[in-house]
Amino acid sequence: MSWLVWIIFGLLVGYIANRIMGRRRGLLRNMIIGLLGAVLGGWLASLAGIGSVTAFTIEGFLIAIGGAVLLIWLLRRL
Image (cartoon, rainbow, N blue to C red; front, side, top):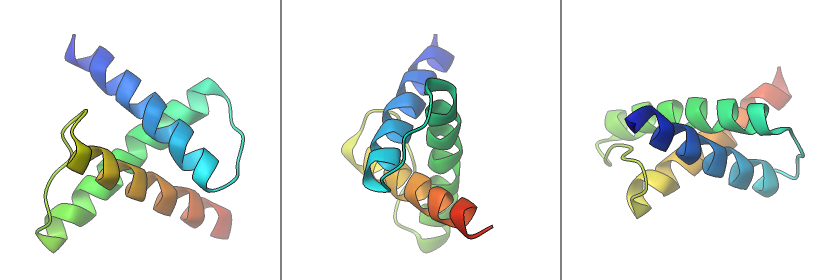
């Protein structure tokens, strides 16, 4: 059941990050961007000593969105 929570979390994060960056992508791409962004954001946050990504907490949500926005920015640069 926890994988379903992470899929929903990834969809929400990916959708919000794509809206922030002014992009429109499909459902699957939103989920992938959201999940990878959560991983990237969590990794960077743990390196900085800020916190970790926990699904559906304010801190985890903001870190995941930040990671997803960073991921979209990096993908645009490539």
